[in-house]
Amino acid sequence: MGSLAMTSEHSSDRLHKKGFRRHARVGEALREVIAMAIERYVDDRRLGLVTVTAVDAAPDLKTARVLVSVLGAPIDGALEVLNAAAPVLQREIARSLRMKQTPRITFFGDATPERADRISRLLTSSDNPEGQA
Image: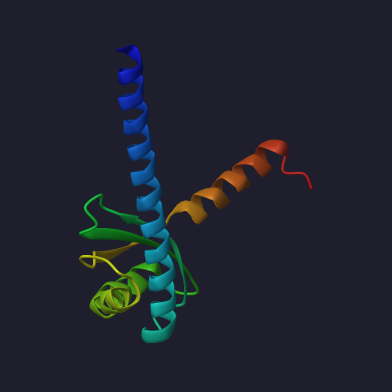
């Protein structure tokens, strides 16, 4: 009886891990397609250099948050352009990936690069508290 409980527990863990891996693969596939589609279909001077850093798809895959980092342009303008272009990008997702339904994508700025830079500067200043070179 104890072995049955272990078996079902282990199969549950396997299913959970398998679902997580699938979710991660879908997110990565979406990231790649969206990045290529932005490069190919979105031409706006307000965009700057855009990097799609991550895609966080909902478990039901109906929506997805697309995190982007932007260089050479204000993030607000770039997000406005990208969110306006979302229907075009969603069509490209539908063409490129086999999914029951294409997630509705929304773009958000990824603050990770700025946070990493700030932490790096804080660490550098703490290594050199007197501001000496």
